[in-house]
Image (cartoon, rainbow, N blue to C red):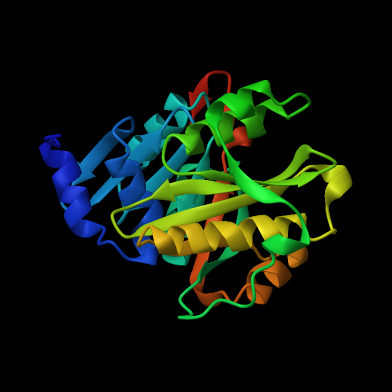
Amino acid sequence: MTLPSPAHQLLAAAPDIPRWLEVRALLLSGDSEILGVAGSSGVVVHPASRVIGIAGMPSAEALCAAVARCGGDAVIVADPAQVGFVTAALPLCSVRRAWRFVFRRESLPPGLAGRCPVRPMSGAEVLETADLPEDLRASLLRASGMAAVMAAFASGRPVSFASVNWETETQCDLYAETLPRYRGRGYAAACLDRMVREARFRGKLAAGVVEWSNHQSLSLVRRLGATRIGECSLIDTVGCALFGRIGP
């Protein structure tokens, strides 16, 4: 696939390292939009998942246009240095601080999957599974197009899931979610452990983003041998749409 010139500009500014994982993955996804590119700055938006990545310090107009592409309800992944720019452009947004983690250890802790059944789950199985929240179902279906979705089972029913959120040439951002009534029982640990091993088998560096306030997930990734490498912010824009106008 031949990428347009703006994509080449931002790819050059977003090397394949964890700091740039989301921006680079969005650029490589094939179904994102690129706005306001000027030099090494620009905005990339994935309307289907309502995720926005920013490189450098693009214009406020480009950022507001990206939020509008998502109907006003998006999550912007930003570095600490970019947060002030984003909140100035979108004064009604809310900021959630998060840590970046990678699973770089040459040897993982002893496998956890033996504690409960864990296996890959196809897109067809995701569609057929009853009682899944629709946003989770949509996320798993999208993920199944990139790599295997792992599921942990209780009494024959899938109750916890781990999948690839975004990926680049050498990295993948992992995501895990457990149905509420099954949380705290080790299902997420078994799923994520299997997903980290799957990423390594595929030659990818497994990475993830965990909010500061999510103490249970922070404990989980540390238990699985993750290393904290930096910080980012997840900026919610749902409060920014007023009378059809976004931004200042």
